[in-house]
Length: 497
Image (cartoon, helix red, strand yellow):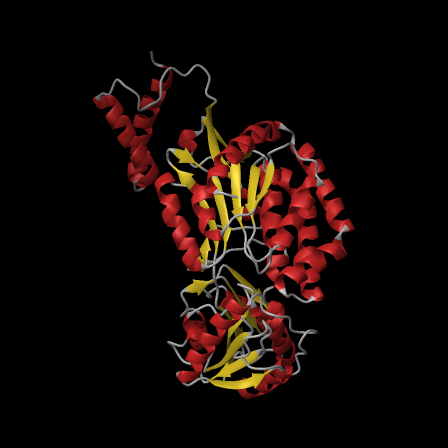
């Protein structure tokens, strides 16, 4: 699609959205139930399509993409109505007893979604579902590397028999997508944009969006830390971290990259983790990378680490990254890493993890928080109280205890990071609320009121009355008592003509 063809899609979506937003929630949910039925009846076909586009293993595609999509649709259809209900705000001060405030939620209008290649079904599917249930129209662009999954998504939402123009799938080069979706002040594009991808691309989109003050949700890069305390169950920790580091060939923004292990259990953990890494079977436990280009990027980052003194402690089967004929790549464990290396400073989007010793929790926390990214993290410990305390001090948007990566598959938990990992949230109630604008409605319930206390005409009496209110609220005990008569006098101004 050309950029010049985009404005008519926006206008068509706006027309469809007006009628869609006017429908009761139950009718919107009923339409999306058809999409769920289609999804459930095409599980094998969708799994095969994901594998063909991405190089994923069938188990990764089914468990991390298709299953979360099915769970998400059921969750948002059940909970969406409650998320959108008007909510009363409790009064903030008894002196404003006559005001009643409520929060209302309004759809943005046309929501744009630009999704990535690493989870091409699961990531956009949930966002499309939330946007539609909230009363928006959607224009979706998936990654150019995964066109067949994009067309499969189009088939899923076509099965919902939505009004024409309400959901539109487009294919266009990534370089054209940002300008087309965002538009310009004189020719605006979508009303809100959701983007998942690199931090560099997210920053470029922010610059494009600035002239319009277009709201964005950006889910960007990560360099996740896993902290293994000395009281951790090392069998579970090594197995769980190996999965979080190497599933999807390490191409998960919330995968483990830095493993920070208490020095008392460092050697034993490293032995277990290296044994698991060496036992990964190509094509059975470890899929291929998405492209040769991505593999080359990761290879350059690893070579830089090695030149700076890092050591490969373990490698799964298969040739090293120099093999240019295939997107296959081994899982690697690095040790003797230090600040300044790519493994410590950058996102490495491939099957590579570093194991780092730490003297205690304080040092582990310092290393974990030294990254400019803050997407997700984990703490591994048998002591849940201490683990929760440590987890709460990690600078990351999602922190798991004795697990990692899987929280993205929980529809109820918000997903998003701090720092260079992005802005806003997807998933859960916070993610659902990103699909709507919040409006406050303030109602005055006092009968027969002629004027507010602070309206014109001003006078010394009014000034004295307001001063009395201030003293009543914030003065010392004697001042509060002395202020009561002045407050009562000014109170009757409500009914004075």
